[in-house]
Amino acid sequence: MNTILPRIKKHFDALQDRLLCFREQEVQVEGWFKGEMLFLLSGLKREGVIEGFGREAGNQQGRTKVDLTIALGGSTHWIELKHWLVGVERGARLDPPFYFGDPTSVGIVKDFDKLVAVASEAPKWFLILLTGNPGSELWEKGLARFHRKFTPRKLLSLSTPKEFPAAYFLGLLGTRCDELRGA
Image 1 (spheres, one colour):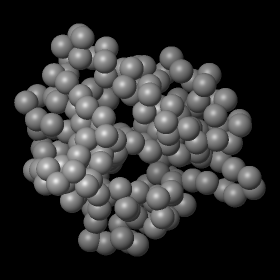
Image 2 (tube, one colour):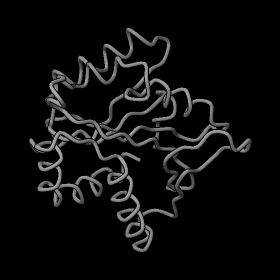
Image 3 (cartoon, rainbow, N blue to C red):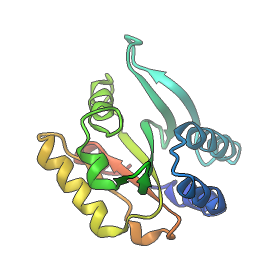
Image 4 (cartoon, rainbow, N blue to C red):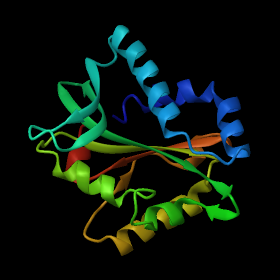
């Protein structure tokens, strides 16, 4: 998954006007993010960069639905998408420590448990679009809060805010360290 992150970044670099608009309007549009990802993945499949992809994929029992799967390098990668506004929404300050610490569907702990429950040893990821780059300090504080509050769950960040413009950040997170080797 981290091998295609530069292509994903290039796509979203061209959409900064929209991302700035979302931040100004104080809105999270996860459906739009998913639509952009499907558009991008369609192109990557045509180019042969990925072998295929699926949406709303489920495990064998069919109860768990994950936002995306990507066939890449002979493996199926399971991905949950999130869109987080960094700033103020209706007077409330929103930042990575808030989101990472939230036990509801606003945060990611429920999605983490859903990913881990998928009956597959394949890599499992979060791709989080943050409109408004939070900077490295807030990102790291958020991850630390998640690990402290929801232990023994573990996330590993494979992207850093300093690699992205002020308009946005794409946080790529792996759910287990052993799944990240060679991914």
